[in-house]
Image (cartoon, rainbow, N blue to C red):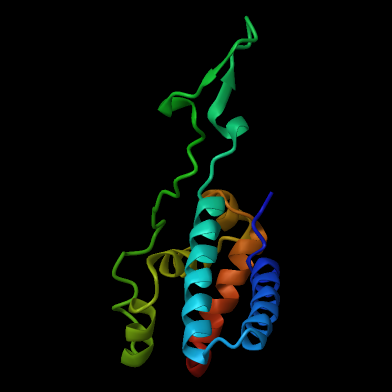
Length: 156
């Protein structure tokens, strides 16, 4: 089950508003209320990180097909989802070949995964094939492409 940050954050914010009202009614100062909110926000973020990075037992368990016994997976039993970069027909220096210097600099300032996605699009790969290569959903790639377009809007 995916962690829905926006729903959880909205719930957290609503609870914080109620608590702030209770604290005001109890006569607490604004500074103390703010300190308590910061503490709660830090705890919320720590909890979120724990949930996001938690591995489910099913992800860590493998079953022997013959005996049916369960055991923790060895490293070689985990699926290889690491995206491997390869530039088919493109030089890794393609960014430097862009004539518009400001566009080239804007692309170089992007995260490496955005540059890799642009490279694959230039090579002619579809959104679905890029997603399959990277081991993510097509929706995830579509969102990243939308972010790339937003960053490069001045040049389009």
